[in-house]
View 1: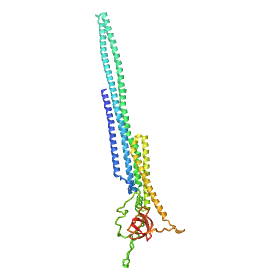
View 2: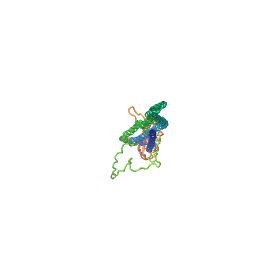
View 3: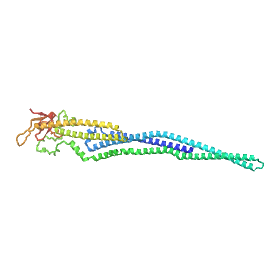
Length: 476
């Protein structure tokens, strides 16, 4: 019996040890997940350019696609953190609490088993005692019977001696019968207690300790898989987003966008004509001269070396300024739409977390929600500002158009110059809406400076466009 108790004690202790090992295993898994998520976040941060949305390259699909991939990887890292958090709270914490309760139950059940075992041992000792007494009394009864038979056969024995011997034999036999009945009853009692101990008490104690523990541990095994399965749909979306980013890359669109951003608006230069000096023809001044002409000592702010860009693009001619402002408005509108979509997605995810707490902590999304709201407010302010710039530019252009509409007869409108000017410096018009002029050239003023530093002129060759007002001297 002692061996059986020791086996149960040892086996149930090994079960507790297994629960502790599994808790440690899951805890180390969560540490790996947290470390992995941290490394992924650091990696995406390393390759994410600050202010990338403001850079010209961000408009190209191949640059934008890489940024989308970095964003998806950052979200992917967040899901690894969710797995770690759920495993820690749902498995490690819960199993640790259960293990403490199990240790207390095991102590109680083993104590009950010990008491039952001690009771059975006491019953066995009592059985041995009644057995020995029965054996002793039965031996004495046999001796008394033999003595009575011998006395009765003895011719010298008196009738009184014979009667006395028979009474003693009968008394001993009666006592032996009582001991025999006590031994039989005690034996029946012991066998019943022994059967109950081995077939009922010990199995019940074992089942309470082991089967409950195994069932609870099996649930922990299943949770290990289920907790990762819960976030797999979101992880799959992140991976699909990465594939989608690659699919959105369009090499032809990027090439056209690059051309659109950098085109000057002028026709490609014509072939340079051959100038025959043998005929005594003096070379004419050409705008396409490969040799630089004398330029203004103080460089114009729009030259490539000292180009100063203003926020409202006022450094550009009206037509190009309007185009740039409209492009800026379109970019901000797209960015604002994306931010609003992101805000809506975060709010939906928060709702899911609130309804299903095991999927994540709703409060963990608050920093992202606040950051997105701040970004939306900033973008709305930017959009309003550039819409004001755009409206102002359109008003200037409309005013200029109305002032230069002169009707000469009922059949046609003819725009006439409002003055003459002389070019003080050479200006290479390389932006859309501008025109090239050379120092000393006489020009017709078609539109005066409206306060933005530009005026529209007409060359003798028929070319018309904007030039810096400070580059000419208006004739009185």
